[in-house]
Amino acid sequence: MHSKLKKSLSLLILSLLIAAFLLAACQAQKETGPPEQLLQPAPEQVTETIEEPSAPKVEPEVPPVTETDNNSPPYLIGDELIYRGFTIGETTIQDLQDTLGKPVEITQREVTEFPYAGIIVYEYIYDDAKYMFLLHPDKDADKPLTLYLISFDKHTDYPTPRGINIGDAQEDVLSKFPQEPVAIGGSLMIIETPNRRELYIMFEDGIVTYISIGYCD
Image (cartoon, rainbow, N blue to C red; front, side):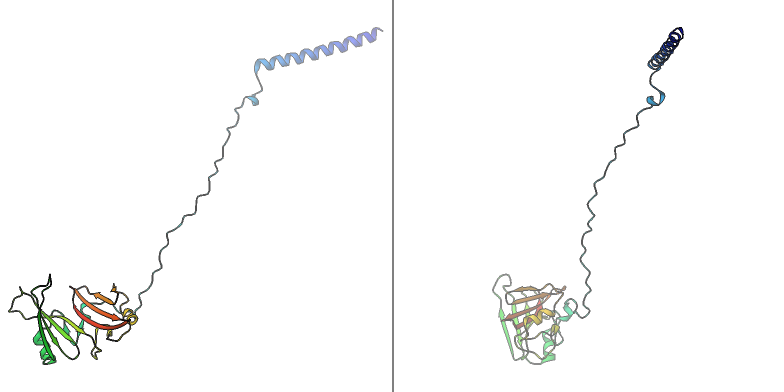
């Protein structure tokens, strides 16, 4: 009996010692704080920025470069507006008669309409064309008159600017002036040159009926 009691006492004392040790450990933890690893700062929270895809860059459209047709005639110039060797602003009445001889008819009239009132118009009519000269009231009488206009309304066998002639189709005439700014109004077509000359063409039912070469008014 004494041995059982002694064994029981021993177990009780051991239990009390273990309890006392655990209590002391808990008290020491409260006084010293949490373990070192628990005092480390929390890692920073990294926020990942997701960039939205940008719209694809659109390059401006560049019109294709077209090569000029080498067969296209150049821009109409004043030097083309010559008929039978006669040039607007240069040919005189004497030059005309020395080349063509006596005209079929010569007409003369005075312009009364504003703003050309007082101008005298001389027209030398030959079989192929009419050649017009103007006398201005303030013009020096000692200077010879020079050619102002050449016109014809029937087919001619002489070379003309770009080969156009009475009886040609309007579409064919336009195709001979692919680069010029052509003014078309109804049955009228006017092409101006840089030196203030013009080619004047009239159509009727799509056919050329009148052509003149002269100064730009």
